[in-house]
Image (cartoon, rainbow, N blue to C red):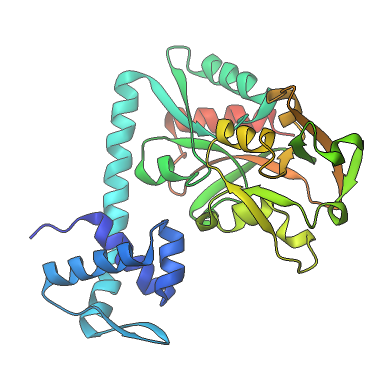
Length: 296
């Protein structure tokens, strides 16, 4: 009998969390979808894996046996998948790197140029990631590394090389009353609706709504977006304001959007990230070395 590794990974996450809600958030799934996956796996194995109660999800005897074996199975599959990706990259001479928004700002092209000096017969293919699941390409193995804003979902599963730190600013419709001021504080913005990433992104979303700088005041969400174009449109339409890296004023300048300085919020950090266990040698190692040489 063949088991879908996706089902096994979902099972392992529920087993680790002991809670369906937290597991669903980690996996970017709805609770009904995750429940369906667990039942499908139980049906395939012919065994009940969890005892469900108001206190959480407790492993049964068969569940404990599978939980003990699953990490090795998933690790072996991940190793095999990386080997296939490495062989494909070697054949095509393409290193695939995901990015969010402006990637590593003005460092992006110099990093790529430095990599080409090390690997002149290779090219870097940049693939934009969505804010709804910024690590999707890394999880699936479709990309080898990613330029990521910290914090990001499942960060502890990846190696992280910090590249640069920059202040954050506030973006708003050009006709917003607060746009008449040159600088603002979080206290000025607590009653404003914010444009946010999907809730499932956890700490990533919290960082961009400044949850830690609100003094316990709940945020009012004006719109949820996953891509820069949708984000910019929501801001320009007056659906809400948004925290942004200071570089957004350069990379996303528009006449209908105003960017203003803000105090009282932590800066934004950009890093190059890649799966743990990868990057020790080969073209990815050369790309990491090129990025490290240009890091602040």
